[in-house]
Figure (cartoon, rainbow, N blue to C red):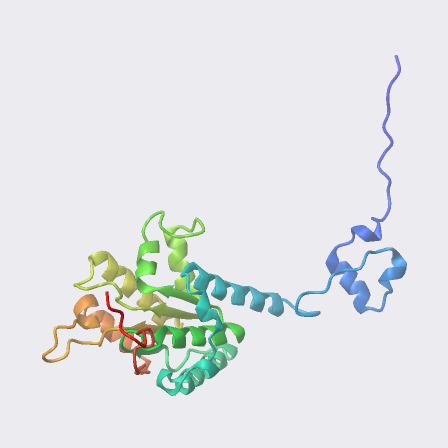
Amino acid sequence: MSVTTHAAPARGMNALGDLSEHIVRVLQNNGADISQLGVPPQPEPQDGLWEDVSVPQARARLNMWRNSIEDAAQNEYLAFRFSHLDDNQKPNTLRGWLDSLVEAKKLDARPTVLNMLMPGPIGSGKSAAACALGNEAAERGLWTLYVKHATYLTWRRPDSAPHNMKAWEVRKRFVECDLLVLDELCGEMDVTATEFARRETIDLIDARISAGRPTAYTTNLRSRRQPGSQAMGVVDILGERLLSRLESSAHLAKIVGPDRRKPAQPLDW
């Protein structure tokens, strides 16, 4: 009876073409002529050669900001920068606050001003200003995310978040980012918030303040109901305790001006 044998695998070093990209770069950095060693040319990173992980991390943070804007279907806001804002949208105030946040991040310190409150009437340009802040923050290396208040509350319910995120992953994501843009605080809330909305909102704000993480808020509402007005304030919807936490360590940047969404000529229909 014959026995079939198989040749033993060859021993020795792997072919240079099988070496990891890291080893190839080490060889390159030490002067090796890779083209003479039979290793195919390695593609350069999109933003040039980087020596540590900070570059891909910064790129990933920028992509997370862009993805959060796209999840909100607000892609047009990705083009805004401070230079695109007018004086009514407080670009200098936002720029100064961002400078302080970046400096605090470098020093691993707690920012002096944690909350930026941006109230204003409908169509005054609050969201554009807040997204200009987010765009610039993401480009300067801060992990920045955008979400509308009503959307966050929806995503905190079971099986409601995009990308198969669990409810706890939604909370973790928006609690832990370096800067959160929470747009339209109390938007779509015409009466006192449900216990769920109140609890989830207080939890988000408390967690971020306790961790020393800054948040920018926009809202169409005043803080409190004004004398002689039927319009509700934030305190009427979410309660005094939340408003107190919201105003702690906060700077106010009122966004004023005409309704930018109003057509030049009224529509007769």
